[in-house]
Length: 112
Image (cartoon, rainbow, N blue to C red; front, side):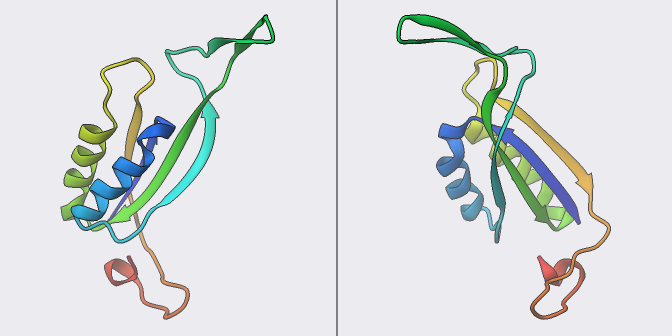
């Protein structure tokens, strides 16, 4: 099993979720997060004053999938979330040692 963490632009969330559902992803967790990378924040103007925003809002997706599905999930996220501009995000893939469905006690891939 693999655990995929993707940081994407907020406006891409619905498109990514729909595309992942089409490739067979059963569920995901989405969180609003803030951070910076090469983008180093940005400047905004509010009531005539310029402010530096050091942390840019992003969406963090967490997805647990069977190992044979991981590459397709990563490609789908990349293809849909990509805008070819700085700040598109990152995708991380980790080995997932175990999983358990709380309601039924199922473990492993059956729990996903």
